[in-house]
Image (cartoon, rainbow, N blue to C red; front, side):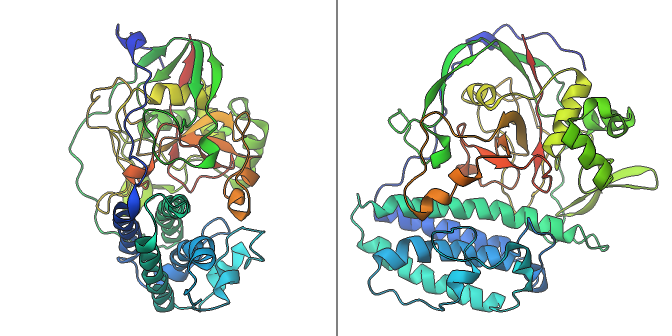
Length: 444
């Protein structure tokens, strides 16, 4: 891959955060947001058959029914039980069945066996959701506009948006096991014919920069605890590719024997490739000499213009090594992302897959947000002076800060209002059931 001429204006990109959704103020806006998020979760499940919602295809995925119940359990456990004096628990056993990993709350039903829970039924879980929703609306309506409970409710809603993405990706993994190649969300809307954007390089100066969420900044939006504290970091001059790596780009790596040559792979990555017999991204299959991929809209021919998705960190790093470049650090990615608009594709019931960029847009960096999560070379670890919140809620992020890699930018399954430049996603390096891709970086 050869670098192209760098536009003259790249060093003048302002490093200021774009606007994000402001922190919710008062019960009226909070009730509206609560109703929107809870309804959207149900909308994602609506096209699915009952049978679709109860299957667990692997230990890392969960049945849709479990997601519907767990996000409800969160509000019941962290909001209603401690704050609503008149709240009546619907079923005592749900506390055990739908606790994901909060050890301070109590024991959890084993994650790999969630698909064995035929009861409560999907209808029972919907009753559970309605029961909790009624209690939550009454509680929110009674809160003072500055009540501290607003923060935990907002956390719960952002937590549910994360599970909306998991519903989509877990359903895709489950459906991909089916020889019928089901299309649970119907046919994909027809994308306009367009060529893939050329890959160029966008340069950034080195220096001392601040990254991470700033609660006292000009834009005070929601952020998870792992996005802070804001702190200084030193960056050497670097450049990012102007767009994500496409299927066409990645096919060239495959055709050059990339999966068969250990020189491109990290040691653990090469062992994983051999053990699991990987020769292509997840969901790809060669049929009659043509590469196809399973999508939520059925099986399709691989489109060389679309961002490559469902790659592990190992595959992303191997591809970068093959090109002679590298993956960006998460600090480089964040500094670059503060200058761009959110021009990618996000959670949309008519197109739940990454799509080719329509144009270069106003920014020289296309699709930094949406379409595919972009692997970085940064391990998921705490920022300087980070401390998890007190109590069980502190288990939300902090205890996972080992053995995982950071991804940035969101995907086609991420609700648009949920993402921001400081957002840190994380997965083990062998995970590839998420919409995970990559963007190249290089030193200057």
